[in-house]
Amino acid sequence: MKIVIAGSRSIENYAALLRAIESSAFEISEVVCGEGCVSYVSIGGYLTPDLRVGQKDVRVLLAFQELFGGSIQTFSTCHMWVVASTKAVEVCKLLLPYSVGKKAQLELLISSWEQNFTGKGNQRTEAQELALALASVQLSRLKQDIVTLKDIEAAANAE
Image (cartoon, rainbow, N blue to C red; front, side):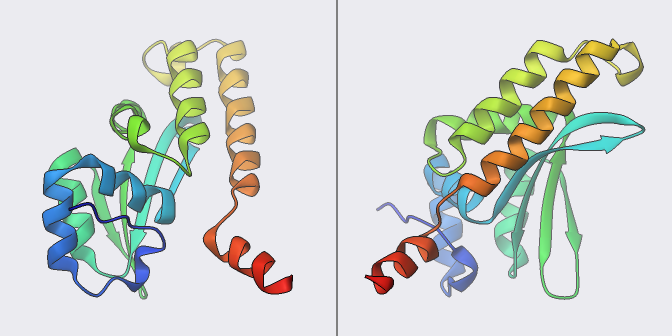
């Protein structure tokens, strides 16, 4: 049984979700599409890939952490699973074949990192760092172009 998870903040049966996560990466990619963020962040003055997924219920994120590593941050209203650097690119590659909503973002992050990563940040040339900065801007623009289920419903209701 496939469970498609988009806008998963409203899921009530997390036990079923965790079983689905254990059996297939498809469900995981849909959580990332609905609740995830693909970007570059500055760490130590150098841009590095960053993948985040936010959820109210930490159990989903604990499954992510068990499968992919990374860390979990806790805020007053939600929890955030975070993986960065080369590990984020590895996870993006695993999710890419199953992704719909974030496919273009995952592809851009993977290709820009593979073309410009040479090791430690201080070993990058200025051109490589500028290329990553451009990719970061392009990722931000792609985020603005994503049409959500709420957008579709609003357009349907307006007609």
